[in-house]
Image (cartoon, rainbow, N blue to C red):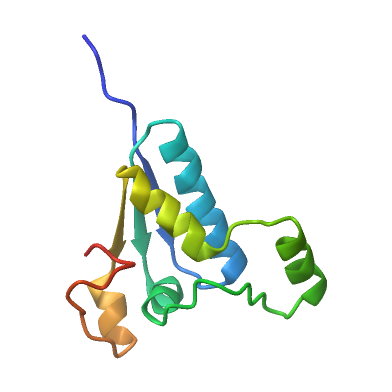
Length: 116
């Protein structure tokens, strides 16, 4: 009897760049090994996606030295990690509607970064 590979679920609450990057990196490692990944966005992580702040590292507190090394080492941005996950066909991204309402947001049909 064959069993399908387990999936990885990543829950992101903080919108801090480094934390979102780590979560997306975990999902990328999962899909690279052929496992499905599900990403769930809450509060400030959801806000970062809705505001499309996926390109420039904006570490808090500001750390120009880290941001410079990040670029020098060609570490992937949040957007490039997300694109890799999308292209794999093994990952979904879901946003919490309760967090969305608390943030004063509205569901947007076809919002590219979030599946549902």
